[in-house]
Image 1 (tube, helix red, strand yellow):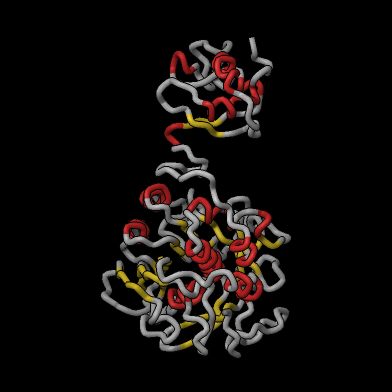
Image 2 (tube, rainbow, N blue to C red):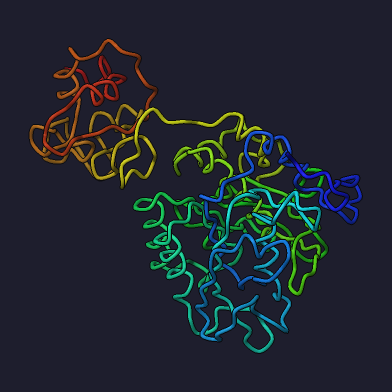
Length: 414
């Protein structure tokens, strides 16, 4: 049952107050009537480390790995404004709940693995000289069986790092891990990393009225690259040395989404199903700014899981049941469908046919091939553009036929 202790009672959201308002805002209590998470689901928190002895966290911690070389076992970045950051984000995701103490975590029966990647350099909490720490932590977390990774920080490089994208791809494609990251606090529409990488849920920040979180000197990043938003203003959570404190920023928004992902993982959803469920426009609450599909709603997510009718194979980047190496995309532009692509000329089947080349000649598909598979139709036709399995063997199966069907009778038909 959801906790009802005075430390959790939500105040008037107009005023924020001294207690937690965010769990009620995202309707976490409604979700908790379905699931409170599972000890079989681990959330990786890649951050400054965690105060492992905190009363609201010590029962939740599976491990902590230090990549800073400082040898510290607690929350790092002591003496900097970032001190306590990892303890705060861990509490938001999975603080011990219904224990008559402290705060509530969104995925509160889940466990946490901490990966300490930041250290204090000249009073600032940064990666220091170990810019490979983030990529290594992502890969290690995936190998250690976590279901969700939360990254409430910016990477070393403004435009990203190939090793970090590769580690994220490994976590997603090979291990089926959902990666969630904060969109940043620069009040900009420019993408930041790791939130801006492929296969990451980028999370913007909202205030109590679901407006874009903004203060006098910073605010949530926004733009089409942001996937979803979550509470980011005056978020009460655990802090080092048995403390509790209120923090603001998209760093606080991201673990709310990670906690919802952990709830869904406890229901048996795979990574594709989790992402599809969280980002389904029907499962979020509306916002009035460019912060993704809306503000996350935990109750709607657990009540409306998007189970897939197929097993997701390794290498299936778009969660359609086919490996990315075995598929191409069909467009709807007649010129594209006919093979007249920019930089190319000539009719389908010609040597310059760059979309898509003939399966008979070069293992791709054009209108001539569509006619060949026409007898296989008879099922519902999916909307174009679609992705479909090309099987790499030079053959077309019934799934391919359905995907190609919008082009039957098109302007290129002989």
